[in-house]
Length: 119
Image (cartoon, rainbow, N blue to C red; front, side, top):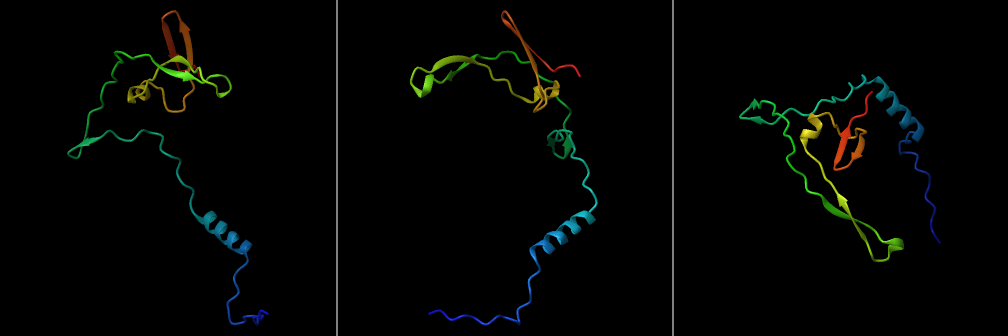
């Protein structure tokens, strides 16, 4: 048989959870608003405490078409190899192709044109 404890009257009563949230929200409301995030890229690397001169964007000289695979039907064998291109580098950002940008890609015989949509 377990013994029941007497109510502890000496313990300080904890504030209700709602009171804690209200206090936290009041403190947050009292803070000044944060400035908008700086959307400028990080500064260029420095050499011996001096800022390096900005580099000219490099023109890509070549890109190799590699392959990736489309999976076979319903998880069965027979994965199909398909051509795969990978373009990456700071030169893309310097040309206006920022991370998350929507692109328009048009295909012609032997040529791909990758553009930022107008507007």
